[in-house]
Length: 285
Image (cartoon, rainbow, N blue to C red; front, side):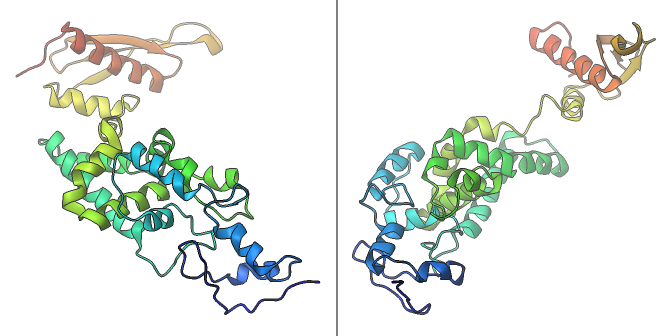
């Protein structure tokens, strides 16, 4: 015999949650052949191996160590890690994602301004966009181990939900928002930078981007560089496109070839960077 529970009823929970309201999307769960308490325990119990939400609340101490931040309230941290698909998400609580987005903007902008003091606003904005892209934040979530702490709707495939770049990036934004919520944005800036890490903060430069490489060469003194393509070599699909990178004075800085003009241009620009690193070419003071 099924058990019918009213949609508007709230249930007290003995494990730290004040109440749980089942949303309309879970209407079918209200007609189940199990006790109401068992149903609720499957959602919110923090100390049973059969809990479908995971991780257990005691595991959050591991997350404190991973992120190296002493979160004061485990309940808030748990909410920050809970995806909006979960019925345990407290929609009435602080909007950690909103605050986290602003905190990330502040920290990254300030870091870029200090790191690259002579770059234009457009160049700084491009670096900021690359650092704060969903792909970059999702990668950070994976590398720090944050992804495995994300809590989702137990009746949705966890792997499918967490595989989304936006879901993992959103977890980073909410956790950063909680840092700012507990300490203030300015006071938490050093903690947020440590969490983001030097690898991410310095990733504003893309060595695979010919445009970024040419901008760097320009800052090093090479202002009017020109790529000169020579006669293609080889037959058919094996054809290669040799090219030279020359200065306005006709000095050849490097030469390279690629299977396409785009690839050749990228290779010749990287060849110049390699020579600069080895001190084989000079740049104007």
